[in-house]
Image (cartoon, rainbow, N blue to C red; front, side):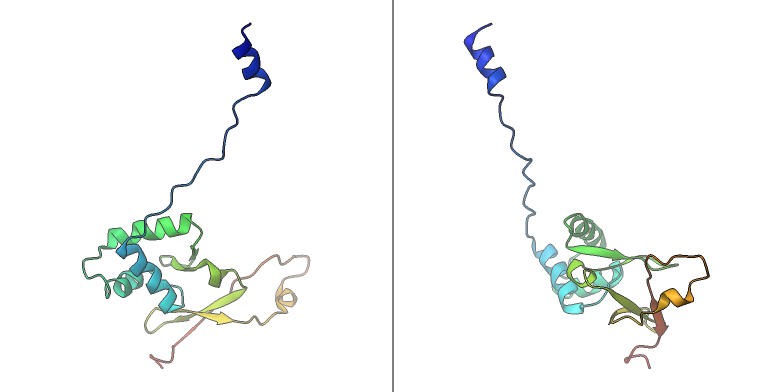
Length: 145
């Protein structure tokens, strides 16, 4: 066995962790990030498109879908499941604290509710164990009331 072969066995090539490519900051992506920041509430794709298109009128809905997927993969936003409807999306920083949502049945918008009624384990049937909960209150927002 040659000296190089021995050296390669004793000192294997060190592999570095895979470098994640930096996401290019486009005007479209910035407009979408700004829409999330300014709305400060869960947004549907349509709402997000409407808000971001105020800054970039040529913004297409496909671009919004792609951006949402990228932001979700990057951990910047999270989905808010909505029964019977398409998911909404909110900033991961907002989702990191325990909160609930209010659904306006007039305009179909969702709003964050900070705080929790607590004591829900008393409502669980005997022998059951509550692990988590998610509350969505519904009614009319201040604009629709």
